[in-house]
Image 1 (tube, rainbow, N blue to C red):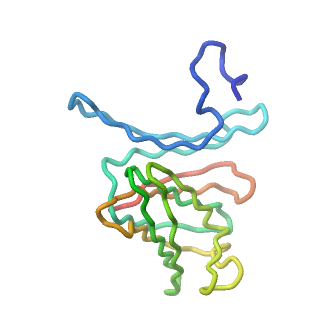
Image 2 (cartoon, rainbow, N blue to C red):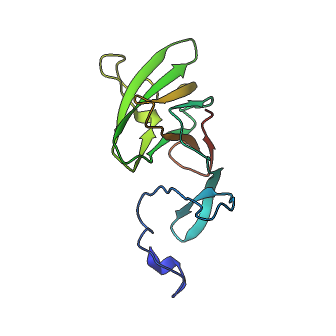
Length: 171
């Protein structure tokens, strides 16, 4: 909403869309990058939020140790920085040893958000088995020559967000 920002404060072409970015230094001077997200309700700005440090490189495999639904709305955030499409395999590791597998096609130079709470697994489990569980996730590029990026964001309470946090996966 461009009216939320003071006149002349910048370009708003990306103000109401989903984005990801690749930042590259052109002069070999190291930089630090992070991404912050904030939630605004009505006229109350920044009612909740989280941030994550940028990762230094994509990887063919990512491990996300924490995840939970029920009290939380949990999202897996995937990015394909490659000029070719790739398929990401998500393996959800549930408490007690059950696993669910899901493949996600990522077009070239794209991002994808997976709202874990609402994932269904036809042929694997009835209903929405991820709706109220604790889990970890392994994210793999099915073509190791095309590495990807993965992080996990959690917002709570489910359905009425008041706070959130985010973490990049470990490689």
